[in-house]
Amino acid sequence: MAQGPLSGLKIIEFAGIGPGPFCGMLLSDLGADVIRIDRKGSGRSSPADITARGRRSVALDLKNPAAIETCLKLMESADGIIEGFRPGVMERLGLGPDVALKRNPKLVYGRMTGWGQFGPYAKAAGHDMNYIAITGALHAIGTDEKPIPPLNLVGDFGGGALYLAFGLLAGVIHARASGEGQVIDCAMSDGAASLMAMFYGFKAMGAWQETRRSNLLDGGAHFYDTYQCADGKWISIGSIEPQFYALLLEKTGITDPEFQNQMDRSAWPSLTAKLAEVLKQKTQAEWCAIMDATDICFAPILDLDEAPKHAHNVARETFVTVEGVIQPAPAPRFSATPGKIQGPPPKIGADNAAALGDWGFSNADVAKLQESGAL
Image (tube, rainbow, N blue to C red; front, top):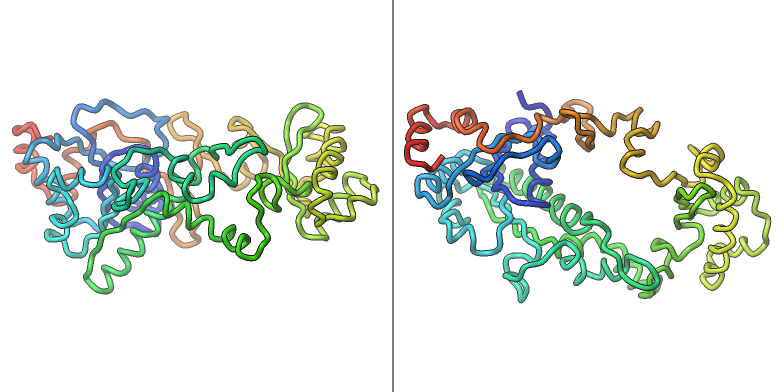
């Protein structure tokens, strides 16, 4: 039995990579019934395929007309669709939104792409860093020497999957109130631009310089940066507010009067070098003993092995283990209807009969699909 605030929500996810599966994971973690349409014969998934967790897999040959009809029949009872193909692919398959919305006028058809459904780049290939490159985000992230891709957190997952999940749920609320479905054109470039809203505000106020590591939040300020410790490990310091900054100086024993010029941008490079020298005198563990749980705005920088073992993460059960694989727990947390990982990543096609049966297909229907080679 699905558990979470989205229990009862029915989503069809056409298997893809990156943001599509992550969006499906988010919805499943909160209780949605997500059926993933996999390509027949596409192999098996692994317990380590974390973003595939919690769904049921139906494997279909989408070159078979019976498989296309199966998808359309599933759409008749679905609340939403997740698809991440290039523009035009679903239309060529006969599964585009025009056809789907005729079968189910309340359907919310979520389309995940890098560049969106229209525009000069719409049909071009790309990856996460390309999508964030045209928004100003990638230019602003990195070292003095070069922009650095921030993993694929800003485009694929932040600007893509989260915006699609948000859009799908908004669309479902509208459809349930009005009976009107619609298409969600979720471009990662749009989402990444949206995530930059505050920084465009800073730019408009004259508070943002285009040179990397010259601003308050990009590592330019000595009080908002990362520092290496005596043991080679790293810590993060974010002492922006005056009272937090004063506590930083107190806990580090700094009495140099130059540090009183906190917001003097011209002093930041010198103060960064001086603070680095101070922080290099102790190990990460020693700084944790001094700064942990204080108002300095401090945390140790942990790797993927260390993070699940940190006391705060352990206390909140931020990470869980499923089939021997350590992974993030569902987020956010709900007091009345908590989400949960609904199950491990499915084997491809493992749920053909059960999932189709739950969505209104008879045993005879499933048998015919198997005989036709569609399933």
